[in-house]
Image (cartoon, rainbow, N blue to C red; front, side, top):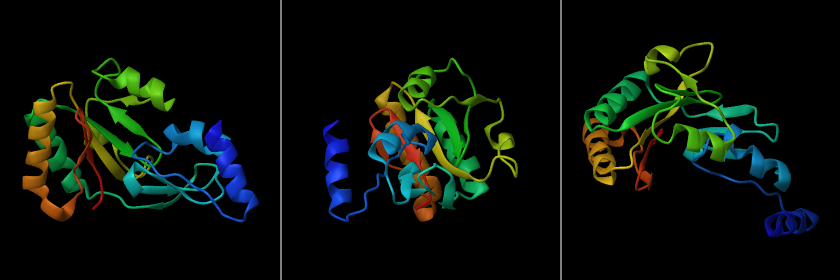
Length: 170
C-alpha cells in the first residue's frame, strides 16, 4: 500500500513510474496493476519489455544454440531447467522441485513438456530466459560456472538467489 501511495504521488508530480524484475511479465501483474505503471515494464532481467497490459513490445531473445547449451550445462550439474518465452513458461515436470511454489508466487502456471527446446517455436515465440533451480546451492553454483565457461559473454548467467540461475541475453 505504501508503494501505491508513493507511485501515485510521483505520477501527480508528473513523473512516470515503472518496475523491472527477473520475473516473467505475467508474474508481475500483481505489482503492475496496483501501481498503475504507465511506462514500459522490464521483465526477465530486461529480456522482455511489456506495456501496461503486459503485451510484449520489445524482446531480447537468446539464440537457440545458447539455450540448448545452457540446458545441457544445467542438466549436467543436476539442476532442473525451465525455459521462458515472452508469454510462456515451460518445465519438464509440473510437480518438479519448486515449480508449484513459483507458480503460486508469480500467479503464472507453466506448461509441462519433456522437450524444452522442442516446445519453442513460432507459436510461442523465441526463448528469453532459461532458469536453473535446485535446493542444493553448490549444484546451482556448478551450473553457473559451467554455463559461463561454455557460453562466455554470449549470455548473462548470474544467480538471482542461491537456488536460481538466470540465463538471459547479455
